[in-house]
Image (cartoon, rainbow, N blue to C red; front, side, top):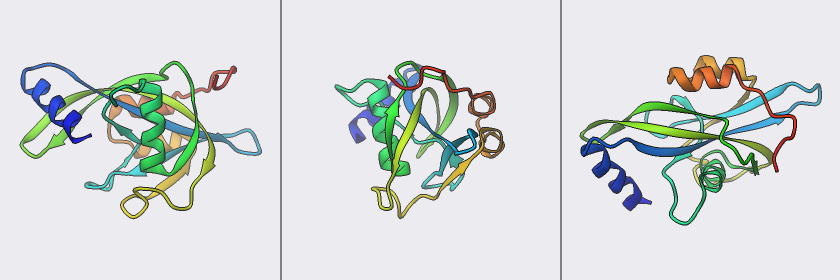
Length: 155
């Protein structure tokens, strides 16, 4: 995926907007309350949602599902339509670039005890309003705070 990141940096330097995909893993508690999963970033240790670069030959929904497995150690089914989008400034070695992120809701079916980035990340299940308070990106914070799960669920 390093080539995708390099391509994105080249596009950003030309003034083009670049894209990422993200997942908001969620589950319903026994009392019907909604919880979302946040993970810490590897470098700044801030709470974020699992996200990454688009993957060649994979839909945004599929790429978001893979990122959730790699970064948060969860398996599940993503809803077909994005729940929303947000933009943020991504820190790169030589500065910052603006990134537009498509966010997919992922209904968690399994939480893995061991996963690819377990040694580098912590995860936390929280009510969406609490999760929103921990997120630095204002648009993502608003998306989490106002989160509702469509009645149809994943398809």
